[in-house]
Image (cartoon, rainbow, N blue to C red):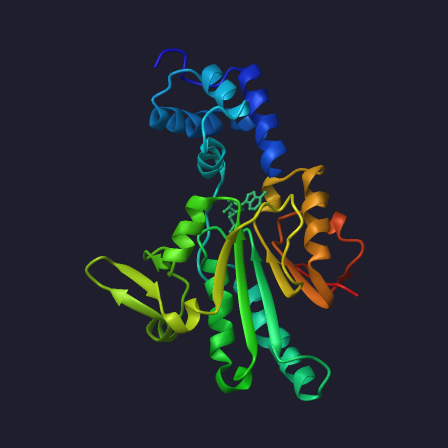
Length: 276
Ligand SMILES: C[S@@+](CC[C@H](N)C(=O)[O-])C[C@H]1O[C@@H](n2cnc3c(N)ncnc32)[C@H](O)[C@@H]1O
């Protein structure tokens, strides 16, 4: 594979702009080696040996389905169950208690729609669904939905399969692991049980586009805007805020740098915003 060691500066700029246009992700100039490695892997899979040829075919849409595979290979899908427990504790505690109390007082419907935006392989969506399942009879008769979305089809396929290795479930308490997962000791995997999986659905969705679904009561948007820049963050956040019910909550990752673009929301804590 001659000429395929590392992207040259002009090649890097082309891919950097292409990725930003299609995903909102801004690849830092310092990430040349990382991006080169990721694209080189994709070239090998396609049997190509030139970054320039690949870029032309990709940008001119001459390889059917390639944009999706390219996005799969350049996204960072790192995640695990009950990531940043404070956020999940708030959801399982104050948020659900508030919703249950308001419904009991007749101030809201017995229904909850929660969105795990940029859910990667589904661990965040299933963690939220476990919190719902744990409320048991308090939510009996409610219409409950957790929608997980991501731009990567490969990540979504893993989410739909709902089978995880030891690292993903490391932070799941043993009682939860026993109650909501089926273990396969030989394979060292854990499969989410239907009672939880049945609360979730997964769709491909690009955060740069408006969500074409009914509004949500709570949106988790964590550890994705960290990859965006000041041009793409406000586009994604505007779409998300438009998909939030009045009085609904947005949970952001503490290092995502979303605060400057959330002026229309009331700030409740370092990670929590409420739509007036
Ligand atoms: C690091 S994971 C975060 C997963 C989960 N939210 C968490 O906090 O653990 C980031 C995810 O964002 C997704 N992503 C990146 N750009 C996106 C976009 N424009 N629209 C939707 N998802 C995107 C990636 O595919 C990846 O799965």
